[in-house]
Image 1 (cartoon, rainbow, N blue to C red):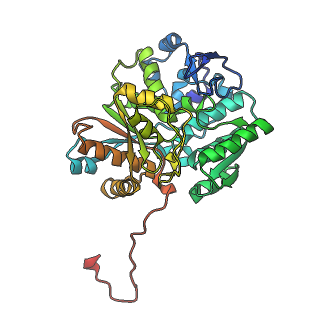
Image 2 (tube, one colour):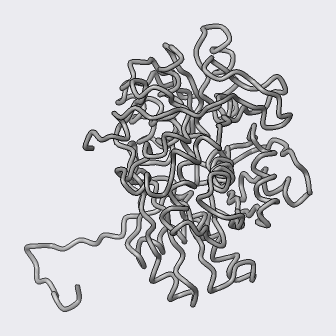
Image 3 (tube, rainbow, N blue to C red):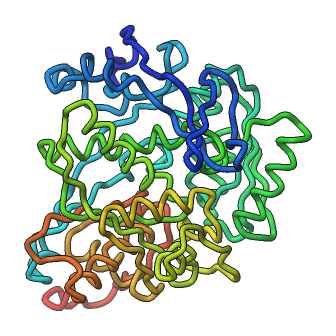
Length: 413
């Protein structure tokens, strides 16, 4: 990455305070905070009138295209606290062959696998670790299904902060080794991610670690919201008709919904919003169950299982924020079975040359199902989120062998 003005220039900060996402209670910024007194996520609030004067389309157009070009809408006040590994703007890739097969406008994939550590977790963790540095944190801890832990370990090491990472014992091996390779103290736990989270919470209370669990601190959501900021600009400030987002803890979906409100408040977009589709696996679908039951909070999903480990989250602390966004947008929460996830992942690679992660495959499968059900129009603009590079996941061996010593029928190859 070229060291650029987004990282080195002095720019104004417009953070005013933190606010409970459930009750609206106000909290002080610039000090270590966890959940609100109601046990719910804290959201960063800004002087959006001030941002409106500083962050114009012209100012953005003159800046290098990376995550930090949005600094006026981000919580890191001092450039000295920015911890960066080169967070690029991720591309929108049209699935042309899929569109032709489905007789529909080709869906666009926002390919988050291009980010440092190979997943969209880099967005949230670069912001959380930068703020941990700003707040003087020495050790962070978190549970992970894989990619978040890898990003946390990488950024913590770069910032000189220790990291303690707990993961389920069936976490993909590449993720576990990646965490350790990047300096994290990683432990496999005989349970699910919320079981890991319970141990982390106890360790934070007893050892003074800073808990970076999903939505248990205010800043991962601020990094994740840059997906929505980027998307709006990439589509010429007109949001798509629908977004399909793989939903475990839901930080990105909540963050994008927040980003759209902030962009409207500073005059960069209008009131039109996309329908938000929260995509879960059938083997772990607490948000889908709550959505269908008309509930605002989701009960824990027992015996959670799916090939899409990143969305195997039995209970999300920000459940009400996910469900609020989905309902306000006119979208839905959708559950997809593992066979459909695997098939969609393989189709995207064979048809369009794009290696999706299983969670990204889930969004493609959900889109195809929504299209078949008439939930999405064939002429609508749809964005699917691929949250990590498919290179991190096992692939079926489709190779065949040749004997170089024997006769080879070249015409049959």
